[in-house]
Image 1 (cartoon, rainbow, N blue to C red):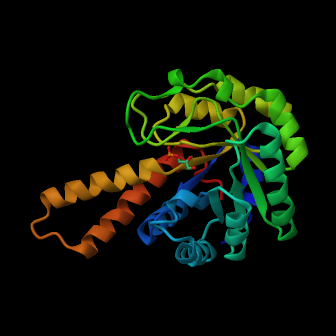
Image 2 (tube, protein in one colour):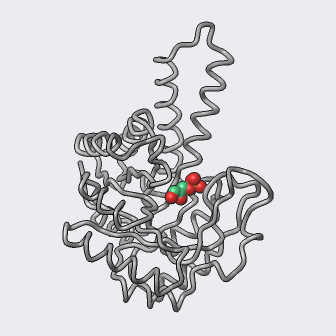
Length: 286
Ligand code: 13P
């Protein structure tokens, strides 16, 4: 069933687990994610980031996400990930997404506040929730060079005092934090600043979001979840899972064919999503 972001996140927030938000770039990803969520009786968020539009156009993906969500036996919300402008957020809302992220985290604080407020005002008029980001979650560049927490300087981490100011000024529904997490494939397992999550949580009372949810250690995931992270974004792990499954299939199949490959993609998506649902403690929550 299609359920609001607020409803899904408030249950996670109250009961101290995290909902997985899975970036789905094709029908196979959506089918696998929904199957995993239904089997494990877990709420789930389907999402698409603006940088992914060139190969997963939002106009085509929106009806797929929405129909899959409506038909699912578990709560599903449909979210725009890393919207880069007011225009993109408005477009996603018009297409039926029931929450949007405006990512103005590269701007100075007051400009981030101003850009986020504009989106919140517009989105709330349509009953749509907003996630924003404070601090800077970097990108590994898909495994190029040595990356990880050690390379991130403390000044890109989300500041506790600023988080209170930002939330009070913008009235966002969820805040993505930077605590040493990066998008993409880590070369080394990162060491997240989970104490910072706790401090931000103690200062504020809204759900917090962890981006870059592929490749983090189990202990860091657990520390994040138990200290205030209510949504965790996962993209790279799904792509790696599918690639590995297809490589294996092509190595072993006597006469490989496209339909079989599509099934393999669904299977791999389902496995990766299921692993993360269990890890995030959202299994059995519905
Ligand atoms: P990963 O690609 O590292 O899983 O990050 C996903 C993400 O945070 C999307 O916003």
